[in-house]
Each structure stands twice: as structure tokens, then as C-alpha cells.
Length: 283
Ligand code: PAF
Image 1 (cartoon, protein in one colour):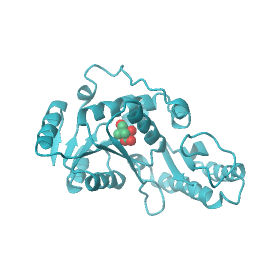
Image 2 (cartoon, helix red, strand yellow; image 1 turned 135 degrees about the horizontal axis):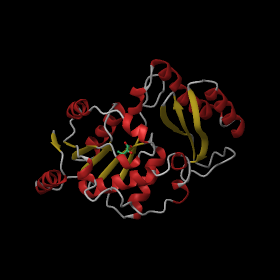
Image 3 (cartoon, helix red, strand yellow; image 1 turned 45 degrees about the horizontal axis):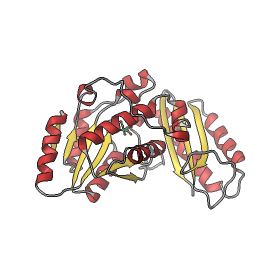
Image 4 (spheres, protein in one colour; image 1 turned 30 degrees about the horizontal axis):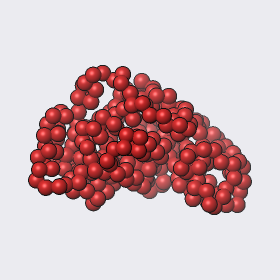
């Protein structure tokens, strides 16, 4: 596996690779602290493209909470070992100056409409502006054929699909399923920050989503959401930011279940000091 820290070195290498013959590049952007969920994206990229590039960059501009940025887990040596073992071809590990040589002020100007105002956007002001900024820059650098994203960041996937459409980027977005721990907790880099007690409480987020999926056809939606909200709120370690069932393609609120309407349940909550998100596609 090749490791590059600068844009110039990475692009020189990708040009050489391209000159060897037409190769499709699969790109997996990450913020490091890798887990099996990331490795499943590397796996998908290896299967669906000829050459796999993974970036590790903790993007400061997408953290609305400076404390969250400070505490974001960093384990670069372990990450590189994992990527090597996963047979990733290139790890791109730039610093802030490489990604933002002209500073961080220039943002990508895209009107995201409703998806840019609801759920994560409402609870983390400025977050998606930072995500758009860094992913646009990374796509410009790597120029991949395919971009691999995890469904766990459901709204982020929608936002990045908009980016690709809006800028007419010649890249296919491939969304891969969420990987879960045996008890159902969605894998996340932030899970390592949970204490043993918080870890036990955290599984309730996926339990709430599963209960919604199980009962949505029989129980009125508002009742079902209140029940699950109450189940989560009864745990003193959990503070729910949202637990909703929305239209799966627009994120618009829905008030009743209809088999013909795509529905997704999403949750965001702090478990102790750690903010976690999860979702389940219902129909
Ligand atoms: O999902 C993430 O880890 C980040 O938001 C991403 C896409 C790597 C951009 O920093």
C-alpha cells in the first residue's frame, strides 16, 4: 500500500496508474479511527473498482462543536495497518494545509433545500457545509470513478448525492449498508469513547429503530414514536435529539404509514457525552 501526505505526490501516482491502462478508481473518504464498517467500504471499493484510495482526514470545518473535534479519536498507525490488511491500494493522509491551502473560508455554494435544514442540519449548524467543502475538495484531488459511503450517515449520503448532481461530477455514489455489533449497535468511530455503562445504554438506539420497524404496520406512528422516545428517555444516560420516521427520499415528515411511501426511521442522541446517530430503512 502506498501512503501519500501531499496532493502533488498522490496525483502524480494516480496519473502513473492511469497511464498503465484505463483503471477505475474507488474512493473511500474517512476521518480515521477505522472500524469494520469502514473496512466493508474498502471491500466494496475493491470489488467494484480496480484501484482503491482511502483518505484519512479529520475535517475541522464539519465540527460544529469544538469539544467534539478535540475529542475525535485519532489512531493513525492502527488505521494504516488496517488499510494494509484490507488490501487498500492507497492511503491519503493529508494535513489541514494540503486540503485547505487558501484557508477554510471558501464554501461550496449549493442550495440543499429541505435536507439542508432538517435533522442533522438543524442540530449541527454548519456541519453539512463542512462536509460538502471537504468532500468536493477530496473529489477534485482524487477524481475517482466511484465514491463509497456508509448508509449510517443517511442524510450525509443524500447531501453528497446532491453535490455530485449539482456539480455534475463524473462519479457514481455507492451507498453501503450499516455494519452493526452483534447486539445491534451501529459501528461508529465514536463508540470507542463510550464507557461500559454508556455502551450498554447505546444499544437502545437500534432497539428503538427495530421496534418501530416491527410495529409500524399495526401501531399509529405517533403512538409508536412516543413509546420508543419514552423508552430511550427513561435511561438517564440517553438524551434524545430526534427520533423520527420521515419520507426516505426527501426527509419530509410523515404522519401515517403507507406501504407505497418510502420511509426511514432516524435517531440522534447523546449517550453520556457521546453523540450517536443511526437509521433504518423501513419501506
Ligand atoms: O463520514 C465521514 O467520516 C465524513 O463526514 C467524511 C465523509 C469523511 C467527510 O469528512
